[in-house]
Amino acid sequence: MSNDATVLIVDDEKPITDAYAQWLEDDFTVRTAYSGSEALEKLDESVDVVLLDRRMPDLSGEDVLTQIHEQGLTCRVALVSAVEPDFDILELGFDAYLEKPVSEADELLETVRALLRRSTYDAQMQQFLSLANKKAALETKKSPEELDASEEYDELSAELADLRGQLSATATTLDEDDLRAEFYDGKEFDGGDDGDETDEE
Image (cartoon, rainbow, N blue to C red; front, side, top):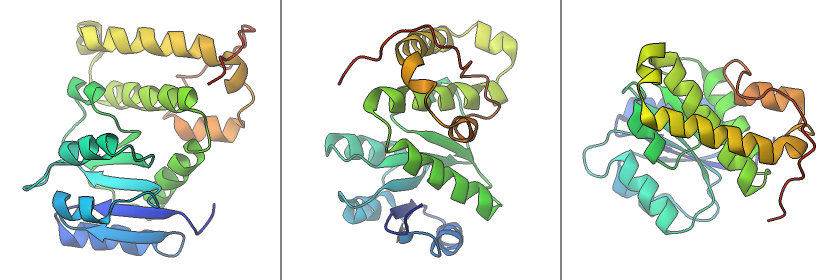
C-alpha cells in the first residue's frame, strides 16, 4: 500500500486522535483534526481516507459526512464511535464502522488498507461493500428478533441481494484475501457466479 495515501483523523478527544496518528504515520501521510469544523478545513481532494468520530460537540461526524458528500469528495470514510451501531446507520454514507475503543494499531491499519483497496473498485462494488459492512455491523449487535422486526434491515438485505446478482461476474474476480478483509466472517459474499454481466458505468 502506498505511503502516498493521506488519512485524516477526526476526534474531539485529543489523546485518541494523537494515538491513531502515531499508529498510522509510518505507513501514511496523516492529518489530524480535533473538531468537526477543523476537519472541514483540512479536507480536500488529496485526502483518501477519513477516520471520523461520530459524536463531537461543534459539528458531529454526521454533519462532516454531509459536507463530504455535498463537496463531491471521493474519500472513503470510517465512522469511529463509542455508540453501538443502530438502524439509523443505514441512512449515513460511510464505508466502515469501528466501535470504540480501538485499542489495536493493527485493527486501525487494516481498516485504512481495506478502504484504500476499496477506492480502486468501481462505484457499484463500493456500494455493495459499504452496505455489506453496515449489515455485518448490525448483525454483531442486534438480536435475530430485532433484525427480523426491522423493515430497514429487510430493505438492506434485499438491496444487497440485488447488487450481489449484478456484481457476481465482477466479484468472483476479486482476490479471496480482499473479500475476507472486507467482511467479518465472509457470509456476505457467497462466491457464486450466475453468469450475469456487470453493467458498464
